[in-house]
Amino acid sequence: MRPARALIDLDALRHNYHLARSRHGGRALAVVKANAYGHGAAQCARALAADADGFAVAFLEEALELRAAGIDQPILLLEGVFAPAELDEVVRHDLWIVVHHAEQLRIIDHARPALPLEVWLKMNSGMNRAGFLSHELRPAWQRLKDSGKVAGITLMTHFARADEPQVIATTEQLTAFDTATRELPGPRSLANSGAILGWPAAHRDWGRPGILLYGADPMPDEPNGLHPVMTLESAVVALREIPAGAPLGYGGRFHAERATRVGLVALGYADGYPRSVPNGTPVAVDGVRTRLIGRVSMDLLTIDLTDLPDAGLGSRVELWGANIPVNRIAQAAKTISYELLCNVKRVRFEYSG
Ligand SMILES: *Cc1c(COP(=O)(O)O)cnc(C)c1O
Image (tube, rainbow, N blue to C red; front, side, top):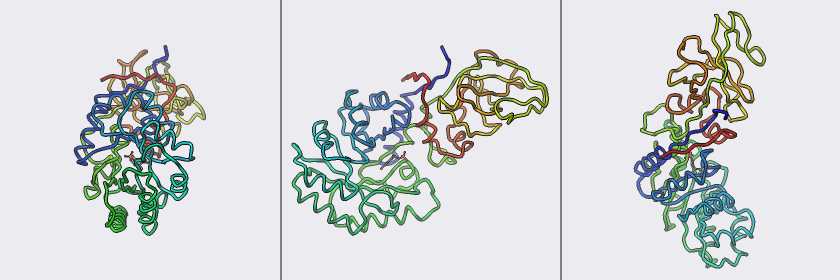
């Protein structure tokens, strides 16, 4: 059997959820959209079911997967509904919905839901992606109230730059939100992972931790007590010595500076490891750091074992996990941990804890 696997540590996931909730205070929706950032939504939600106050996913189908997996906590649809028919499913499966633009108000106006809806009304406080502007918020709130179809309204917004502790944008968004919502009652939810860690003023009734749960800090330079949840690993499946000056792999991107012992590892970009990382990107072989050399190919990659004489066929190779932070690989690939984690596929997933 091919040795490529993603090991998912569910104890670490629970640890991180509790850390996020205690840093934030109040209640916390565990964000498990996009298959729990690539970790397996049903498994992660089940592992958190006894602890989490609720879950958040992007859209209806993701929520139905959790209901089918036996999750009966509240589930919020962060994008809300896309068509009137989805509201029947929302009621049938007891889901909560975000309302972030006028078309969704119209859908509710024309609907006859069998039970009142639980709505999270989203304000655009400066990100300018989704949500109602300050002058639209109060009329939207009133329209929902007057519809008689809404049980409760939570006020929410989302930050564009909460992972940048130095910039003023988050303070401006906070002020915009507080000003626009001053006279509106009801619970509030502002903080994603960055704001949970970095912006105490944004802590209100509900936090919405996502990437934090998976142990990848959105502000990687600060120590934080998070435990990585995913270990992406494979093994050395072949060995070869190449002389100084010899090229290695596609494009001959790497040339051996000295006689080099090359380990061939069964994992490639089709498994979600980024092709864009340079020579020298760290990997850990049986817990010892060495470097990736040559281009990552679809099914395989190559590493330098010259200084690791004990390593050989079958040696365990960690691409990210406890020894190699996923943020380090994201930096090498000029992207963010979120994208790498979401893209893991084809490997076997094994759960513990
Ligand atoms: C994805 C998402 C989150 C979680 O963001 P993280 O940065 O992963 O914590 C929170 N709120 C909304 C609206 C989201 O779409």
